[in-house]
Length: 194
Image (cartoon, rainbow, N blue to C red; front, top):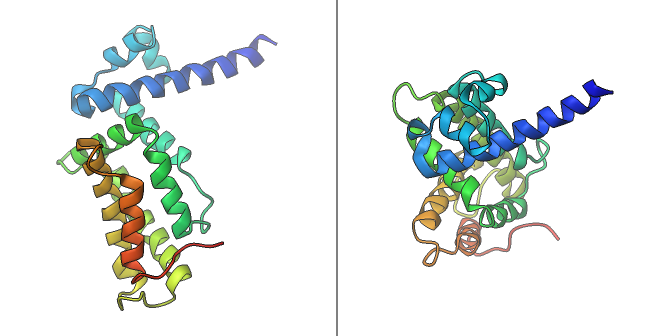
């Protein structure tokens, strides 16, 4: 019975560490964050934290994977209206968006431990977005672009809006701006499903 209780407590502690890591990375960036700062935030020693995450890189990967799990939709089930809902959801969790944006920005530097994660993630995102656009518009969008040509633009708008919103949330209504982009993408046509 003790082993049954230990596992859920370990999972709770792990989730608590991930939340603390999100906060610390959002405040300081990955390079400025330390295992000691995360450990202190959850009331552990650095050695205690290393029981759950033996390296800073292991913690980073877990943070990135957790963020993607929170946003997960079963493969092939994304639609443009669901992307709009994701943007609205992100507007309710600025700490997560800030952490993701900080890591994304830092990951373009040589040797950053998140670089491979983001490169792979963007490959998957472009594929998924091309499928979403093909399902919505067919082989050509109203502009004449193929879904594959428009997919990186869709990803760029979503991430770029996050940066603008984080820098000036009073001036940038992220969900409204994304809806405007979808209207632009569709040539003024309504998008989404009933």
